[in-house]
Image (cartoon, rainbow, N blue to C red; front, side):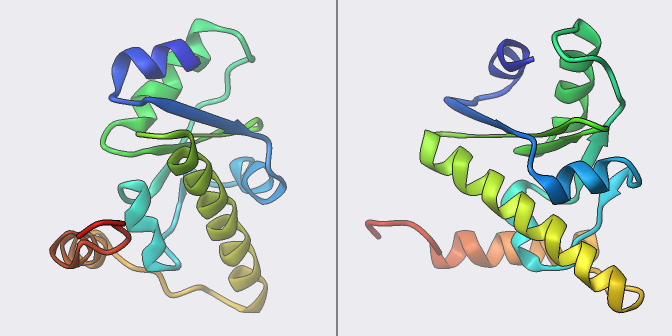
Length: 138
């Protein structure tokens, strides 16, 4: 799976986790809704790839397909994979994904979460680029 992601993307580093909130939600969601604008940093709504056993070409293909246009994917009944230009960036994305999953879980306990749509996430991405938000030397 990792090799397939390296081949299909511009990933320089990959982080693969089995974090608890992501795994729990992987069993019930087809996509993680955007409960916070931090989702824009992952490329948009995070898709859940179909279940396939670890170590299989089916898992690799499903992960790559669900990653299209994204830097994070949730693997059904398994975990998550994020990638980035550096190991630090891939790790930060994995932490963000688990945080978003936890926030969504808690919001569902309180009611029906209000979520952001693709236009709102695109606006966040554009503002981030325009402000060079998060860049070290600008």
